[in-house]
Image (cartoon, rainbow, N blue to C red):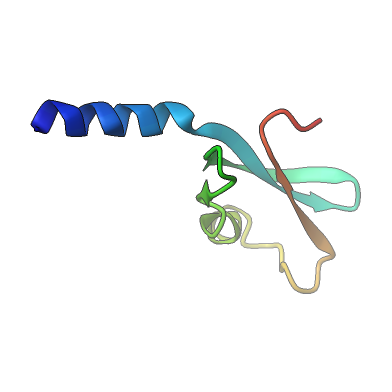
Length: 77
């Protein structure tokens, strides 16, 4: 039973792709946060992106500094 569980976990990890949450000010990228995207478009780490941004860039205010946030799926240009 244990090896089957390990194999299932391994397959789930393979199905994940890397996406990004990108923070822009005007047209300039100021921060990229990498996330895991599964085939069903469920993403791990999206909610952590604003927290990580605020930790790394405390001088910016997401509400008043005209910061735009975009989600980039794997394969998007």
